[in-house]
Image (cartoon, rainbow, N blue to C red; front, side, top):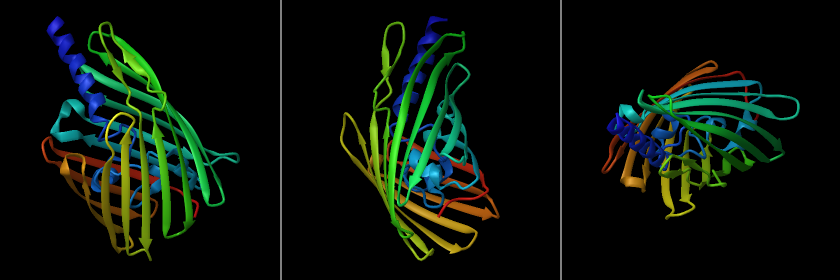
Length: 274
C-alpha cells in the first residue's frame, strides 16, 4: 500500500514537471502541431494560453482537447474550455483532468478578457487538486495574466505569464512548486496563405527556450503546420479541418529523448472579433 502511494505521488510530481513543455489548459491539437507554441495559434488565437486573446470571441467558443505527452497514458490530459461574450468583458470557464486512476490532477478555472482598440488584456484563475486512489487530496491554485497587441491583421504580439505567485502543492513530506513561466510570441500572416509563428518560453528559474512554426492554408477549410522547438530538439506537424463553425485539429511532436506526444482538439465557434 505504501509503495503504491509513493508511486502515485511520483507520477504526480512527474505530471507537474511535464507542464514545462505542455500546459494542461491548452488546445492540444493546435499547440502540439506548432512545436508546443501556446501563446499563439496557427488558426484560433483565442484558444491560446494568453487570457487576453479570449477577447477575440464575438459570441461563443467551446473546445475539447486531448493530450498524450511522450506516449504515457499515465500523463494523458483532457480539457474543456468555453468562452462567451458579455457586454462588459468576455468570460471563460475551463476544467481539465490529467493522470491515471491512481494519481490525477483536476483543474477548474475562470477568467475575463477585454479589448481596447488594438490592445487586449485578460486574467484567469485556477484551482488545482491532486487526488490519489485512496481519497487523499492536495490542493493549490495559480493565476495566468496576458496582454496582446494587434497593429494590423498581419501582425500579432502576445505575452502571457503563468503562476506568477509560484505557489506549491504541499504534501506530507515534500512540496511541488507550480512553476512560474512566461511566453512571448509573435505571428505574421501573409494574405491568408501562410503564417510564421515565433515564441520564447522562459521559466522564472531556468533558461529561455525558442520555438518556431510555419502554417500554410492550401484551402479555406484546411490548414497544415510544421514546427521546431529547442526544448528537446522537438519537431512537430499538424493538420486542421474547418466546416462552418466547427473544426478539428490533430498534432504530433517528437522530443529527442522523451519520444512522441499526440494532441487533438475539437471546437465550435459562433463568432470572433476582428
